[in-house]
Length: 311
View 1 (cartoon, rainbow, N blue to C red):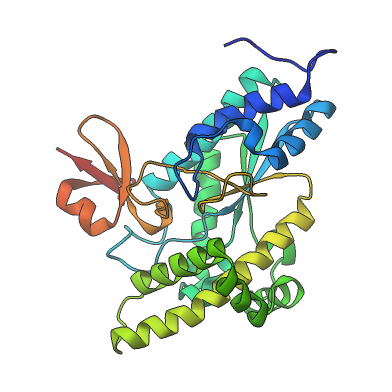
View 2: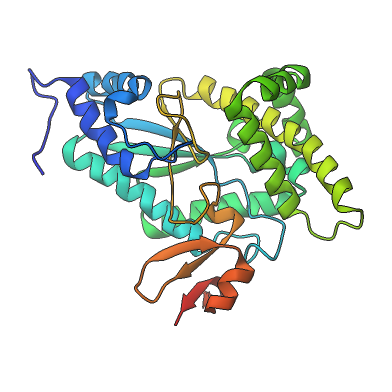
């Protein structure tokens, strides 16, 4: 590959398109249309601003909140092979950018578990342990192009419910505004339905009827979206110049660039809602723990469940 630099005469927009082309194969979109880098003017402008300064490109990625509370989907509450592979992928992607743009790139993982931990029914202690586990993986593997940012970096050691209330009050849209958006915007409706489905699937031990569970999860889904929007606005305030990535599918040209971390049969599947399976050909995929257990044997790492091996 020809090395592109920011030498006099180099066009930041051309180099920016080359950088964005490295992300396009991993684009998580609301459709399967193949597009060129020029279809993402928002990201191209942000990347070009970094290039003009000769500064590292900084991406923010809200996500990596905590493991699903449903033991049928995951191996436990700590990061495992799914997170390890995803973090390596992000660090490698930054390395690929550095090969054509020497200042390189950095991804700030904005771990959002505490924002809606009460709504997804995950203990705050598990969320802290998960985020700390991410930091250990990054340090142990020397993934120097990654860092983790969470509510502790914003509001310190305040009680978790106080932090959530503060962020919700300052940044979250009203429930009325969000309900109106769900009624009129297809992408917001798809997000609402996707989160509702996850909440239903992640609920273990519910003793009521299926319809009662769905009603409760629809109510909680609005709260999750409110808090997610609030977290996004807080991130934008703290990291105003950063290129925003998203683990959710995004329309082409949207302000957020949807990115797929690992192969999975469902565009909504993430490492924190699933287990990793290594196929016989050496490739990896994500699926619920119960499905992976039918296809492979459990592999331990440091005496903890890590992933499944097929064959």
